[in-house]
Image 1 (cartoon, rainbow, N blue to C red):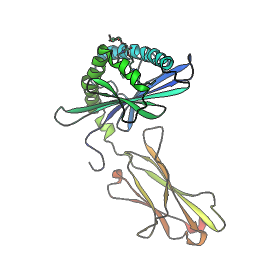
Image 2: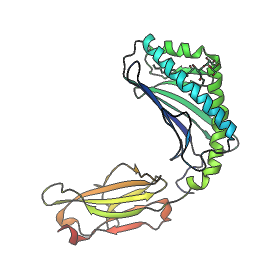
Image 3: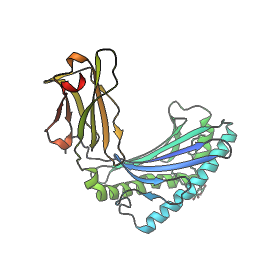
Image 4: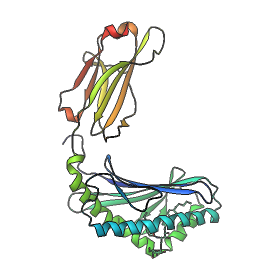
Length: 283
Ligand code: J76
């Protein structure tokens, strides 16, 4: 179907905050494409399933095994980093972010990745069978990476999680969640007047909400003519896995009449939403 890719990446994110030598927390979350499937909160010893299909095709035993591996990993990771922090005299506070996942391709092929960021900058990746520094990683990291690479058991576990567990989980999730991933939800749109940008000027707002998937086209128009001064906000998430976008246009008060907001989205099947500015509201 148009606009939606054939492949849906599965991403696991880890956010670890180290405030000082004693206070730390680690949270985990997983996404299939645009949909969050799992959450793993700091205090919790179990993975939270956010969708009815979040178990994919894993058996209860497989989930228990995976949870156990991740539980051991979480406490070992925290301890490792606290040791590195002393060894490298890293000053608190700092943040570590991990992004790991995979994407299955037609014909059993899949690609996996694991990247680590320190203070928001990519510093380490897992490549094949080893941890490797990122191209511009600071030199002090090499000592940590050397230590990390000495642990063959962990390297083998990471390798098997990335090349076996991840694609298996992702393809099971994809199968179970396919209809929700591929659903089309139509936007609703409405107009309003924003705060006046100056004397005799108006800010026209076009709100578009409730659509899925994310790609959307919204423009202020005069007839068939795009208004290039249209300002597009960020596409923001609603709480129900749909999206919201606000698009504005600043115009002279006398020029608002005849303007319209046009919305194109894959769910509308070519039947664009067109809303006309009601000149009487702004005088
Ligand atoms: C991202 C998923 C990784 C899952 C790997 C699980 C393996 C594991 O938990 N290893 C820890 C325990 O290892 C012992 O026990 C294993 C069996 O459970 C094996 O027998 C193993 O041989 C044995 O040593 C081990 O302590 C790991 O070191 C945990 C942390 C791994 C890690 O990701 N460390 C890490 C990553 C990036 C450290 C630093 C960085 C870079 C940032 C540095 C900035 C200060």
